[in-house]
Length: 381
Image 1 (spheres, one colour):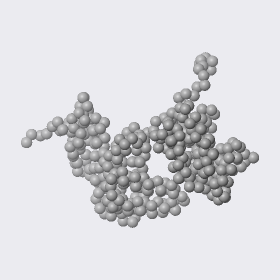
Image 2 (cartoon, helix red, strand yellow; image 1 turned 45 degrees about the vertical axis):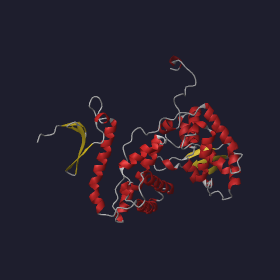
Image 3 (tube, helix red, strand yellow; image 1 turned 30 degrees about the horizontal axis):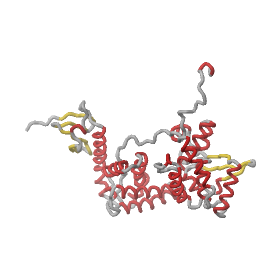
Image 4 (cartoon, one colour; image 1 turned 135 degrees about the vertical axis):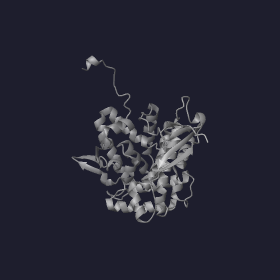
């Protein structure tokens, strides 16, 4: 029998008798499979692997690496999708007690919510083994979401969110209870980083201001107060949900908003201390009185999560430019940080947002049009 001619095209990718194959060594055993993509879909005009072929190989290679763990998994019970959710919740609260509050309740809730999205999105039954949520199924779900009109960044947030349920710290808890669980591998998806922030148009900004002003006339002052915390103080909606009356402090006759953003408390640990305009503070006090008499330590916006659902819907309806924004309310935070950056500079914008300058200049401030007027260099140096 004539020996088949093989030509290596890239790592793990070979051309064999005119067909493209994948090859990988796993625990001393050679794994090989014919690629799904062949011909012009697999190789470009110069005979080089296409991006699509490389992506197919990466997903196949990840799956083969997972094969090496299957023997270990067999030593323990493989939970169903429902059982894994229950196991995670138990482990998360044990970890929280050990670490004095982390992971946060909201992190735990979001992890279980994203796992539910993944189980449904991958079209896997809750009573099926969690291993049915495969890399290939996650990739198919991502493609389907994009084809249905969801932004790539948002679709990737859904897909990548599944990793939290098998975060590194969870595996020890699962193993200790006799379950065989390994980290879930997500597909390789490129170009999913959000683009640089671009300021809303004049028309859209005017629409946002008109919409915000109208909130004060609503009977439910929670709507105005929740929007105010984002637009006036650039708070994240998650921080508004967690806020209490204790966030307001007085110093030398001036009322301040003082809090530690939850997103950065385990990294920079920065505290935001921001003065409140007397007119805004007067309305905040009036709104709080109308909302509840829960006292200083009570929630600032009772039922804030549902309030934000209503606000998101209302803002999308009011401002056409935000109609397709899944998180329309987050644009209020961006508008506020961008305005602070433009008018007073990066340091104040950073103090307001709690983010470092590098982060805010990419995600929250449009730095492309900051020069107030054209000048000559010789007039400056």
